[in-house]
Image (tube, rainbow, N blue to C red; front, side, top):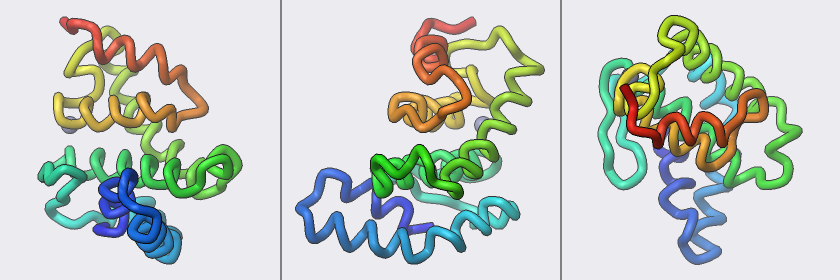
Length: 146
Ligand SMILES: [Zn+2]
């Protein structure tokens, strides 16, 4: 999973460093998606800027970071990419199921818990979703909450 974080961490780095991280990610991308799809997650996950995730939120963090990395690496190709599309549907299933149970939650409890919501906020800020209104979710998360 480290290649995912490397893409995020080098997004603003010099070209050579950024390119190396992106190539490593592309090489492992299909396998990473397979692991995510089959729910094979490490017990802990260190996201960008060293944030550590354990328990349920590590799954959210990995699903979100995977999408963010795809968006960065694929650029204009992201919209038509099959793996990126499947990964979006995968994450959205969990978010929408939670929203169905708690449709009125806003702020840091918009999805699951504050940690999961903070990762989801990164996703909607980067506009990774094509099936939901990123702006609407962003506004709901950034509002005061219940
Ligand atoms: Zn959570």
